Length: 381
Image 1 (cartoon, rainbow, N blue to C red):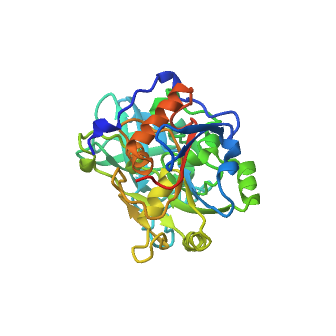
Image 2: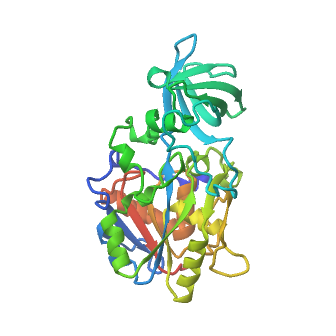
Image 3: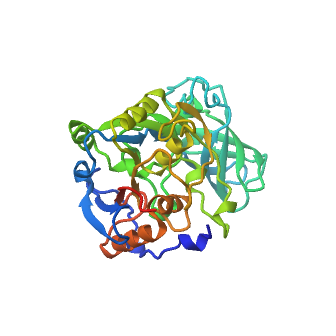
């Protein structure tokens, strides 16, 4: 797909810098793939249950965002640095004791693992390039120290983290790290983001960005869905570079899709099979859920998934044939992004662009803390 086809114009004023006052307080654009392109309806997230049929299976992403942004100085020069952690290198491999690849030590308290440094991949920002051998003193009182071991051609660093503060590295990250808000929000994180940039399902640490469609679901909304006979299941996909890395090539086929760790548990595979048995739709809450389910699609049994864990590099763009997902709740995404390409594949490019235009004309709020769109109905293609 030519990447100029992923462009659209968005007024900067429509970028949401803060979440709505209530989790389920966002607006909802309804897009039916069985109707004419441009034929949309306006609703509210809190009324989602009206548009989800009884017996449907709703699948959420239970990843938890790590406070992965760290600030400090270069030792010896005092130069200001920012370190953005991507993923830990010395954790249990996917499929082992921790199949979702979560950071198992994040709950560690003082003294736990304090003598055990950890190696991480990270991105760094400073006035001058951060070179191997540099030592970075991070956060208050040097709560974390990063020794730069390697710098790859793409600028990604390998660092060794340790905590002189008497904490495990994971506990120090949790205590002192900053919520990794997207830069287009135009602000730093604050205390409220610790809660609002996590979904209510978050319990497997490992993401460096939120699965934003899930931010809309409140406990009350989930309770109303369940009371209406809707089943809730979960997958884990740790949002990383594979999801949010900007597209810089002219042809999307040439975009280097980074691997992201995912897990589809047995209970979810069983739930999908049960939904198929009763003729109910599978509704993905967000593009990350789509990618996890479609990666785990069972090639021998149409519409079903296999319980499995591993890494996915699945890039979904127009022309992709969906195997599992019947409907999608998703936020409004950045131009020239793989997320927008997935939405184009699911809704159809013309229909999706007309829906985006309708949302812009109606003053919807865009991106991570913005409003949402429910794409449902049988595909017309």
